[in-house]
Length: 303
Image 1 (cartoon, rainbow, N blue to C red):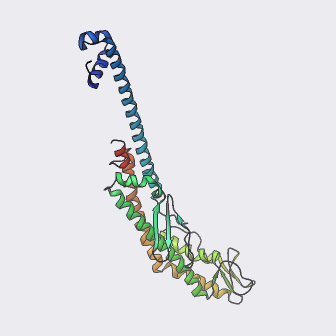
Image 2: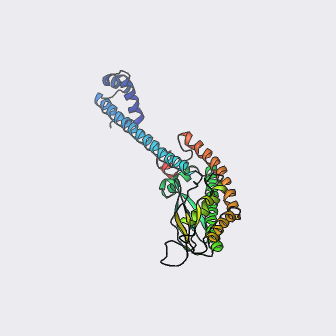
Image 3: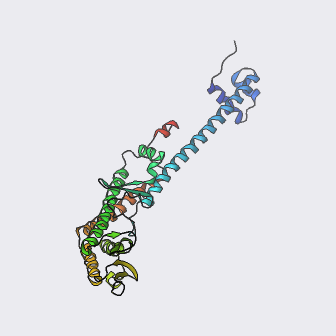
């Protein structure tokens, strides 16, 4: 019965062969068997080694891609960690079902009863769950969770300020806000009037220069029975143009001093602080060049 040789024996013969020994020398001096057996064994050992090398390269490439995909999620979080811009559009209509509020790399969804919820666009990716497995106990999750809550509270405050602007306009002027000019009767045009009340108060709360005070551009046009803003009709109130103008200016002043405006200012300061902290934490992970920890994909790759 021919002698059986182990895989280790065959690897040893391959090593001798690659160091300069001939197949015949290996057969005679080291193995004491037929040269054909040695030749076949060396070829087998070489195929196994090449297969192992190829597999190792494939695994290495798969692992590199896996970490690259996870880092892309990390890098996608960074652009989202921004302070909401002053021109962020929020709805003032209570009966409306507003569409999602688009942020940079994130989305805010507002619901009348529960308020605003912020989530990253990449949270819909399967990679997000793998990233959570890798960084299961990392402080990043706590920090970005805090960031989302603070940003949501700030957007809630802006919505409340915008709605207070609408309430004050209607209360002070005694007119209903409308989206289109009606065929007859007094009116207060929402898309012209609302920005003149809401935006100055918002900019003051954010500590941002607004430009000219609205009183310079809100004019009582007694000839046409209108109140205008930069020559655009803002309200139609024949015979009460001056009174309507003064009431609009009172709404602007009252909104600036309101609790809603103070809430915007307070939450804005909190957003600025937590945004800087969250960016530092995420940037530290991005700078590593790989994502620490392990996930189910890593285990499948044998890592």
